[in-house]
Length: 379
Image 1 (cartoon, helix red, strand yellow):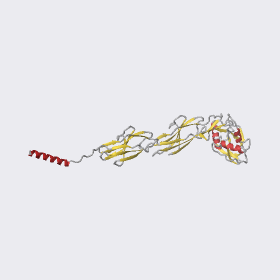
Image 2: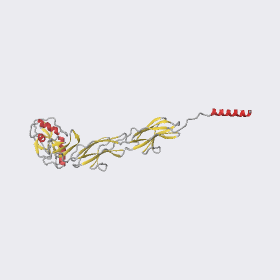
Image 3: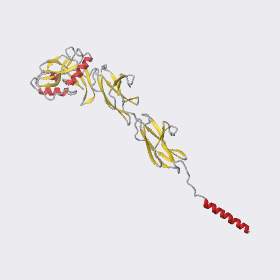
């Protein structure tokens, strides 16, 4: 009995000693926990990506970053980038690694001594590298037109060369007529010449970046040289409806040969710009009593069932002569015409086509001179 009691006492003592030597249970070590942040600051090549580490898994964090791919749930066997820093919380990376107009998948990741953990899959789509705006074609006559657009690089991108591609078929590209503009971001302003009359053209602005060509929105326009509502020649297209009109139509009759009239009388408020011929004509007609003046003739003129004809301004006369000459519709004695733009008390602007070099000039001559008058109307 005594021997048995001694054995139990010895066993109890050993168990007590062992229990005193044992360390407390350590917390379990696991993979860290991370959430993928939404992509921000997205452009054609750039995006800000990142993650939020919410747990280190009771193990030291050794690396963190993001990875991306065209396919969902990318890993570090795909494209990836390391982020600086350590510890819990958010981190972000500003990356310039992407292609324009492309949908990407990406995940944030974190690595500790237990391995690599990934966040949720997030998608984002890059934009164009170039931001385009394009206006309607303007100042359109039978053989010429003007085009205007802007091309600006997005984010860190900058525009190299820029201009327009032109064709008589839709979707013009580098195989078609190229009209180059200035280098760098900003406005593209192009003047087209030698176009065919009464023809629909298509135009697209382009710009280069990183050795690639990018296209803006396509526009179309029709050159002048067709017949208008009154049966006259459409000689000018403003490009859009401005103050109730867009087109200038010229009478096919060119047999009026008159003086400007109103000598020794200054008719104030006559202008030279496009869109001022009608107002000039009304101003002259209201303040000049000469029955057979150039402006009075046009104000009283009727053709094709229309009576809203007027004498062109100086700028309008340039489009009138150029288009009629391109159409071979200009009489031999009609290369010099009156305008409604007065220059002095006894002078007004006359616009003249030089047949030897095909250039058009404006000159001021005495109001008493007789020259051709071609009525026009707008619609």
